[in-house]
Length: 168
Image (tube, rainbow, N blue to C red; front, top):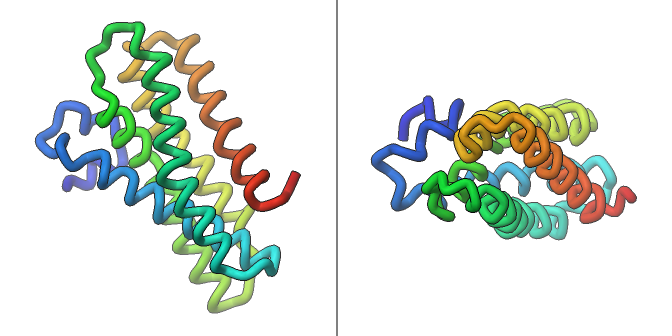
C-alpha cells in the first residue's frame, strides 16, 4: 500500500488494491475508534474493556453504515462508484484519528494526561480533510452536496461518540 493512499484516500478509487480495500479501510477505522474510545474510557475512568468493544464496533460497523448511507446519497449521480470502494475510501480517512489516538495513548500512559478531547477528537476532526477529497470524488465536485454530506458525517460521528460514551 502506498503512503499517498493514507493521505488522500480518494486516489485509491482507481488503484490496484480495490479488491482488499474495504477490509484495509475498516481495519484502519476500527483501530482508530478503538483507540479513541479507549482514551475516552481512560479519561472518564470507565475502564478499558467496554470502551474498546464499543470503539471497535463503531469503527467498523458504524463507519461502514455511514459509508452505505453516503453511497445511497451519491448513487443517484451515476458516478460508477461501487459500495466497497466507498466503504474503503471513507474508512481510510480515519488514518489521522489513528495517529492522534496512538499519540494520546502514549501521553496518557506515560504522563497521565487526559487526551481524549485534545488528541482523540482533534484526530477525528482532522479526518475531515481527506474525507472532503473523497466525497468530492464521489459527487463529481458538486459543492453544495459535498457540504451537506460532510456535515452529516461529522454530526453522525460526534453524536454517536458522545452517546456511546454517555456524554449526552
